[in-house]
Length: 216
Image 1 (tube, helix red, strand yellow):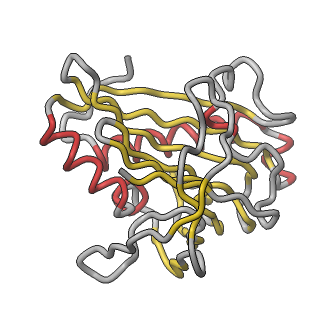
Image 2 (cartoon, helix red, strand yellow):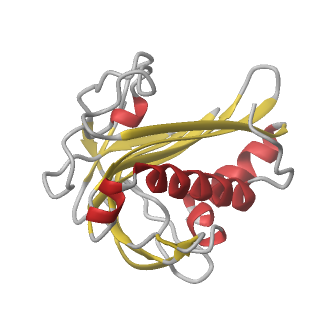
Image 3 (cartoon, one colour):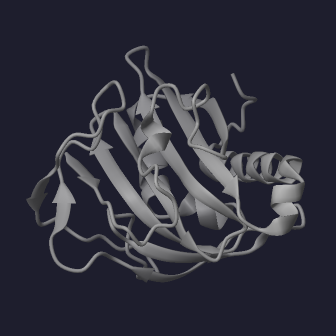
């Protein structure tokens, strides 16, 4: 089991970890637009395991047509322990060393504190930015992480990616986010922020799910 969390003042928003709040959709961080989608992507341990490996090796981002570069794991020991309780409240983490894993091309796996650069476009809209892994979770039936914006994006906020293997054997993929428009154009036309977010969600699902089922 590996769970980690990271918090640093270099992210460009205040509500760090708010994608785990159970009332995100009702009470999003100030001036932000929340979004949430869940999809059943199959069933069984094999499906959960393969999807988890894909998720932690950046498949959602790469498979979504975004270019991943400048992957910088956190220096020194990372924070590990419980990130959030069942109600979404932060829990003080413990400090320990964590094993660093790499994919086939040598890119480090997701780890708390890792900073990455993303570039690309989705439906003609920019998806560039520098982001930091706010927390990472690896449990027997739950795997995921959250990315928070550091800078260079048209929006400011956080998105989380979570896989869960339910007791009924179904495997579900949930993406949650909140975006506060940063650029003048996006502040003037909030619908573009929503459209950009929905397009990203669709790309993430296509990258992770072999079924590409419709949202539940």
